[in-house]
Each structure stands twice: as C-alpha cells, then as structure tokens.
Length: 225
Image (cartoon, rainbow, N blue to C red):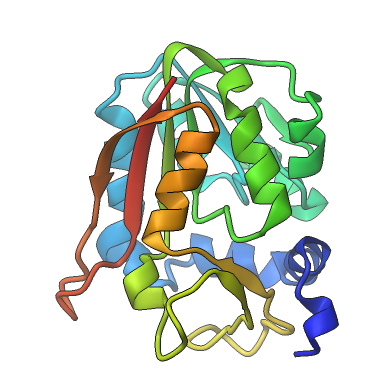
C-alpha cells in the first residue's frame, strides 16, 4: 500500500467499498473470534453498567445496537457508511444516524447517553483522537465510555511496538473483500494516555482471551467522566 493512502479518509473509503461483504460476514457468523470471544465480551461489558441509554459509535450493520435494544435499552447507532446505516435501519434499529467522526467531534451529534460504546471502530488516527476528546459531551453525568479494540501486544505482530500506520488485511475473510483499510496502531500506553487526555478516568481494563490460542483476543477499556 502506498504510504499516501495511510489516512483516515482511506479507512472510510475502504469500508464503503466493503460494506456489502461485511454485512454478509457478520450476519452469517463468519468471524470466529467474534463468535467465540469478542461479541460476548463487549455485550457483557455494556450490560454490567446497566445503562438506560447507549450511543454505539461506528455501529456498522447494527448487531450490538440491536442486541442492546432487544434488552430494553434506548440505543442510538452512528456510522459514516450509508450502506451500513441503511442495513441497521432495515434490521430494526429505529435511531441510526449517518455521521462521520469529524462531524461528531464538531458537536453535530445532538444526544447524550449513559454509555458510549466503540466496538472495534477506532482504527483511525486524528479522527479518533478528536472523537474521544468529544465523548464527555455525549455522556450523562457518571456516564461511561466502553472501547473494545485489538490488543496491541497481539496486533503488533513482528513490527516495532510503536504508534504508527499499518497496512490492513482481509486474511481469513471471503474473496468478496478487497482493498483492506489501513489502520493506526496504538500501544497500550498510548490508549491509556488518549483516554486520560479526553477528560475520562480509566475504571477498568479487561483482556478477553481467545480459547484457541490462550492469548488476548482484544482489550476492553471502561472509562468514566
């Protein structure tokens, strides 16, 4: 991948190209790590806080938002990909909005909730920094931010353990996927520093284990205003 394409805009463009196969993969249960570990991990983390309202940032086709709504929680889904928003709405997510992270950072998301959730949806650079700095404005008093993301120590692979852009991959996915999005790697220290600089206090950090490898499948952060 040309380094000129290591941008937040390139991430969004890739997801727009791959929305259709992504919807099929999620709804067809094709992603084993999600079935075994990570879907349940984020759902449990949200339900443990007993929120009455949730904002799902980067909600995709809406699986998490819909799972929460079925449990009587008022959920607002937000995504920047029109096809994913349309799929979430068609599946029954009543409040699903088409907004980019840059728009949310500028204050264009006019709602607040007991919990804001970002489930594997924070893979950019500047747009993620700006989004997290805006999260306190989306939270009710005592509200929490819940982030699930690839575990840096596992996701780093053989590359240096340092913040920076990485090439993406659709390895393990169907041939329908193409042009994988780049992503911005952050160390564990950098994630914790970003949360703190956003005016939030880290309350918990969890490392759900993949039963196949015994290694962390992800890392979960829970932070509070």
